[in-house]
Amino acid sequence: MKLFTSVHDVTDINALAAEALQLKQNPYSQQHLGKNKTLGLVFLNPSLRTRMSTQKAALNLGMNVMVLNMDKEGWALELQDGVVMNGTTVEHIREAAAVLGQYVDIIGVRSFPGLKNRDEDYNEEIFNKFVKYCGVPVVSLESATRHPLQSLADLVTITELKTKPRPKVVLTWAPHIKPLPQAVPNSFAEWMCKADVDFTIVHPKGYELSTDFTEGATITHNQDEALADADFIYVKNWSAFEPYGKILPGNEDWMLTNEKLKVTNDAKVMHCLPVRRNLELSDEILDGPSSIVVHEAGNRVWAAQAVLKQMLESL
Ligand code: AN0
Ligand code: CP
Image (tube, rainbow, N blue to C red; front, side):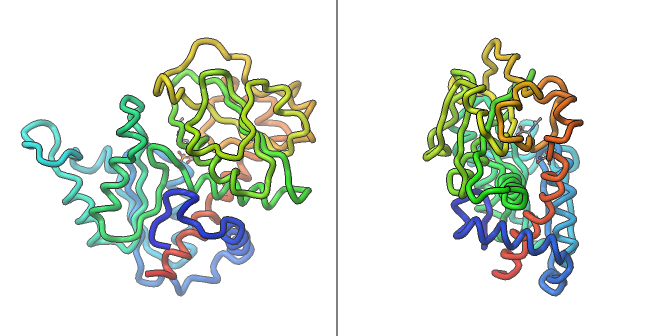
């Protein structure tokens, strides 16, 4: 594997999830693969889980890791071609990415959407320029439209904890006070549409995701009906795709509660984290027996390790 940006970069998602679970059983079995190999992690935005779990995964494989918080520690990046750089930007992404590629064998990049210009975000301009100019394999640490390491960890978690061959999985929109990217729900949707699950997406009218990510999903606006008999509930806020990046008024009652869980099949509740308590998800759920959010975050290590392993094997 030379590129990990979406579900389309993976030939067999179930095999990759199985490999992650194998690595969980035996984390240090592949240390030879990463000897004298270096992973560079480049962050243009904050991160706790992706940062720590991907480093841990690389260390488990015997790699060295270097982290650059580009937004705080790097030079201000110019992205446009052909401009006179007489403003605030100091270094062009052409040189910055190419130079990083000289120092490391694999690069991870986190680059959130601006949520202002939909075409720019959905064309993945920043991420794709890194891929184009760095010259080494690239793994997405969440780009403008997708978060594949998260989605793989989510698939690993569902595979690990399911109690029937084809569980019902429901992605439910949750309230938030800030406009958040569609990357996590887009990505979760495209992975679940390929997984062995019955997949439903439920959200208030106006929060339709791009259909590029949801083919095969059942999409509804009635939360109670969608939650009926669910085995896994994936809670996430996202801003509107149209009008792009906006929060629509109302919908505060979409926060998940224990009362709403009563119609489910004793569902396990997932969230990628970070989560705003009592806005997106209630204390009673996060502190109760239904929540598997910390377990899910733990599985980020094995997801990242499975991906890095396949990349190291193809170097
Ligand atoms: C980000 C998002 O929703 O994409 C990162 C989630 C992993 N969340 C926030 O910005 C709160
Ligand atoms: N879920 C996730 O990617 O968390 P971080 O933003 O903290 O990395």
